[in-house]
Length: 195
Length: 166
Image (cartoon, rainbow over all chains, first blue to last red; front, side, top):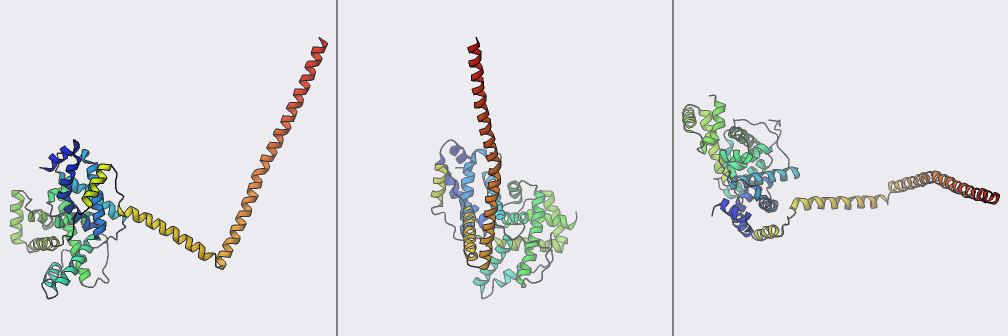
């Protein structure tokens, strides 16, 4: 059964069908929430909060957009709210399109003898850097790279033009790269500046 | 079109979201531009890296039941960070209590106690100042009441004389 059909039935009183939507989307929402919180329990709490919020606002869902897009919008807004309340440290970094080697460094090192350890270290590093990025860049990175959404879908979720998403992605990748390079090289005396 | 515009389009190009004309333009540009080719390679590497970072170990478990119960009872569960705010508030109050207790054993505590005594004395003086005008008003009202009683008595006597005269 399609999402929209399920929603119609739920709005007609069959609230138990909401469990199907929970099964379908809780994993994806968890993945998004985890990208913001970097904490399992916080992410679970957010998933629960988001799914209850979505149910309570189902009547406001307009069938002219996809349910998943609307769901992501609620999820991203809730994650951004969480981020503001949690007073996360935000990086202000310059970015450069140079330093082409940083992703190679991570990928090459991961093939070495200490593969598992390096993988975990690098996973933590990437997650940690993404978590600290300015909100507008973090969100597009999470949706494009972690959640594998298309640019058009991200544009619908964030309700902004495709071109804006493209520009933010380009800058976000540059910031991520610069910050990863800084962390991998020891992280000292890097000049911070606003973008 | 300059290189920066092509670079912005590469994320769309990677996910095959450009229209035919744009796709041809970008493909043609990539053939001649080393920097943009390198940019596209990075996007692909980053997708590979971040794609491998999906959090593991998520299981719905009893969360589904919990959400369904909350929905059916119409109640919303308080998120964890609200509880944390309450916990922080509680911790702050306990800390205040500990500081007050610690101060009571020090010279500073004696100073504070002395100052508190002075404040208390000043409050009593202020209270008595407030009470003074109220006492005066009460006295005035009492005098006025006596005058009314006297006037009432005089009126009664005048009325008796008038009636006696008739």
